[in-house]
Image 1: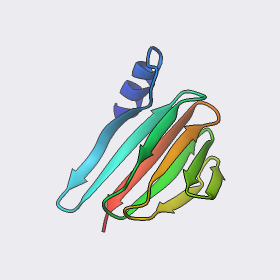
Image 2: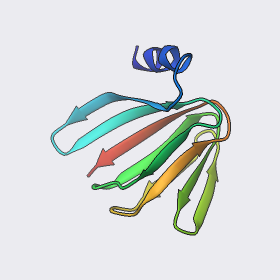
Image 3: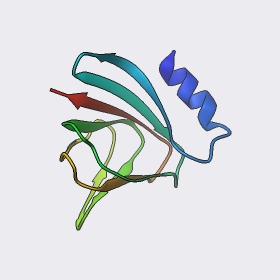
Image 4: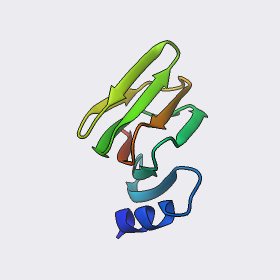
Length: 99
């Protein structure tokens, strides 16, 4: 249901849509939906995080590090490092945070 809701909201959105899929003490899992060209602006992760692409393709930017991720690719996101994510095509990502 969560993924369907995100895809429905993306139809009229001008920015990425994120919704919690699951959370508990010390962790959370988010689904983030993008339309091609959308950017998740500069931000920092304050806890251990991993981004996994479920559909589409995104580009991850961190300082001089630029990584293109396709379906099922994943990347560990360092704590307290400024980064952003740009959708190269319509995309759906899983963000897991915590220990």
